[in-house]
Amino acid sequence: MKIIQEIKKLNEYVLRTMEHSFLNKYVDVPRMNKDKCLIAYSLLRESGLEGEELQEYYAAVMLVQSALDTHEYILQIEKDNVKGRQLTVLAGDYYSSLYYFMLSLCEDLPLIRALSLGIQDVNESKMRLYYSKQSKPEEITSGIKSLEAGILSRVARHFGKEEFIPFISEFLFVSAASQCPDPLFSDYHHQIKNDLLLSRHRLKTQKQPDILKPFMEKRMRALLEAPHYLLPEEG
Image 1 (cartoon, rainbow, N blue to C red):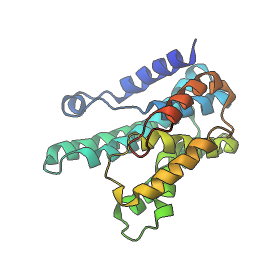
Image 2 (image 1 turned 135 degrees about the horizontal axis):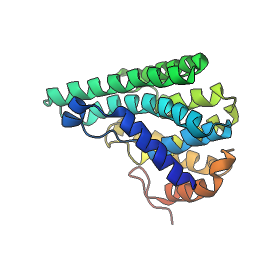
Image 3 (image 1 turned 90 degrees about the vertical axis):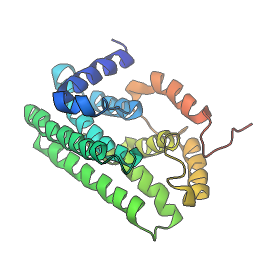
């Protein structure tokens, strides 16, 4: 089965797991970040997981990631839409609870600890990014990388794949830069722009999971060549 087809099948399983009649009525269907899906899938496959075991581990990881991304979506909801914001928080908490159930099926207590540490990393980065008024420019890029890659970096460490962490961090930073609401970090536009240029070049030489190289080459080219709101087209 082709990689993209298998990831699609896994995502359908995750979305079925997330289904809740009340939340589905008021909250949009969870949006799963395709680049994070690719990284999660590649790490688990590189670790030798397949079949039902791959499905359960993938679901657990992406439920955590989706919960955090859902909470992040609150920033894009109008402040006067109190019910929408409250239900989005509820949805994120619901997805978080599901991952404990999925991990109980895997019986992998160390992974529960790894994901818990990842949640801590992401939340600490979020607090520094959004609520600190004394952040240095270089800390903003570092915070965005930690926010985007916190969960999957912990997954990589758990499975002994630390060599992929620099790639994961840079790749998800470049991916996020094209989606980051402007002017969320407008005060640091110049710093992020310069760091994004550096990341685009680093990605060309960093080690990435072998299993995704045929697909990732195309995805990387799209990211590296796509116009970003931060960057003028090179030419």
